[in-house]
Length: 304
Image 1 (cartoon, rainbow, N blue to C red):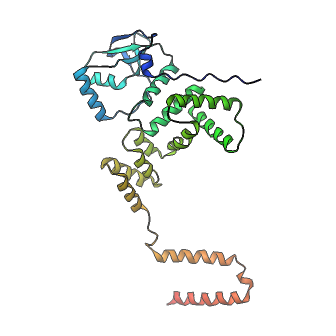
Image 2: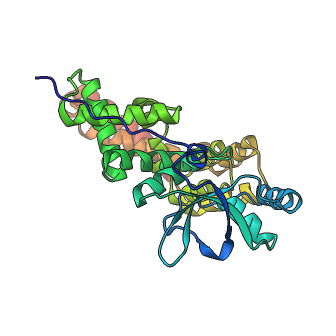
Image 3: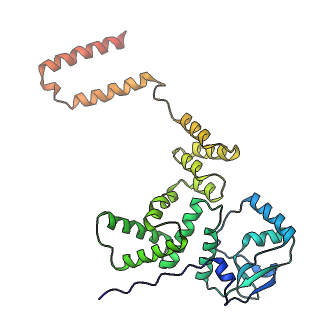
């Protein structure tokens, strides 16, 4: 009997909820009644972009309502629109337009993540973490388990094994979610995005904060020495170094192989000595004589 396939979760955008017939329409709400969620998908706001939005709100007001959900004590939790809320606060507004929708915790996080993925200035690390969060919600598991599932699927396919059972159902859910997001397949997400999470923590931090372009951060991440890497990261951010300038500085950090030819010769001699000591040369009288002659020459060089 064929197994029943799981129904793929439907991904709804913020605009879908703003225009939903189940919402109570747009109304005005005092800013003091709006609270931020404890778990916020968005952690960085570009200062220049915020200044532009603040200026726009000052001139035109809030043009698009915020999306909120009711919580305890006549308060409402923000689901989408934190930039607009911040701009309203910066302009001293007392009220903002909102659309109220009854979300549970899971739905609220999902909608917030979808709004995050729609940002134009989203960097690859933020994008990766947001997609993983959405997949973990769909599969009702942790992000670590999502990664494990993606790697297991890849292994099964590589070894030409059939994907069946729970793994197949998870794959269908993952592929459906990624189609809704519109950017990846399961395999392309695994190979092009998951490796970003293995970058050094200091590099991940500046990427999450939008302080440096991904291509520049990726180049700097190749520096193994933490102090040198952190120093170059700071210089790249403070001086707005180009990728070519960063590569030149990385090149200058590498030790020169020709800086000390004497040291290279000593290393070569040691290596040859170890190799000869393990060889069959000692059993051949002709080779023994030749080795003795070479040792005499080396010894004479050392004395001179």
